[in-house]
Length: 197
Image (cartoon, rainbow, N blue to C red; front, side, top):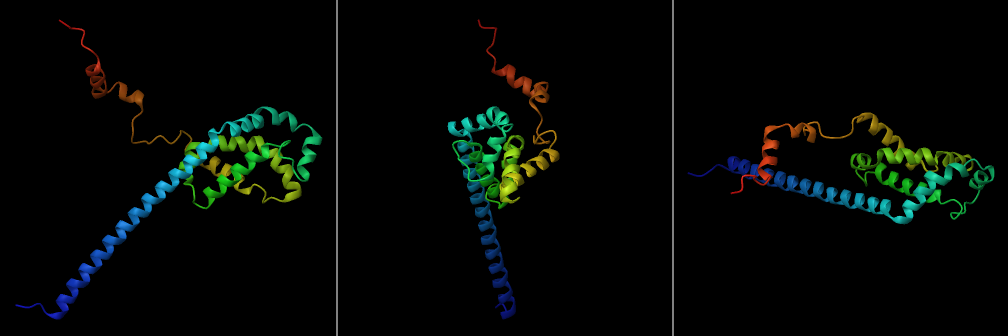
């Protein structure tokens, strides 16, 4: 008994469709894995920059020394023209956040991962540097450091969306687990026996 042509054609079409769908599924999975690897590499680079001793030195300057300097009209006037980076190291931090904010805005860094790690520190740094940026915008326009502002604004929105943090609601906290019999049993089994003979 032979299959007629239309049935044979339907079987081949169905098999072809399944093969194409399987290949598409595999390709999507590879793309997700590649994106995750890229996101992780980007985040690790950001964290390396953050831990750099020179970067931390400038951050300390922004937090401790800059507020007093911002009360000096001469210091502020220097921000209206070409800027001497040695006298204004805060510009380095503005530029760094501008770059990170741009990567985040264009999807090169995963926003949720980035903001989970840095939303509060980004906004705090924006507050420290806002007087500098606003002064510079007087002569350069509102587009100056707009990606830094974008990142800080997204950080505020992220914190509003997660007022109690981002701990997964499906995972109990350690304090809840301590009183659970299985957790307690596991702790006691690991302890050495006091009935040594």
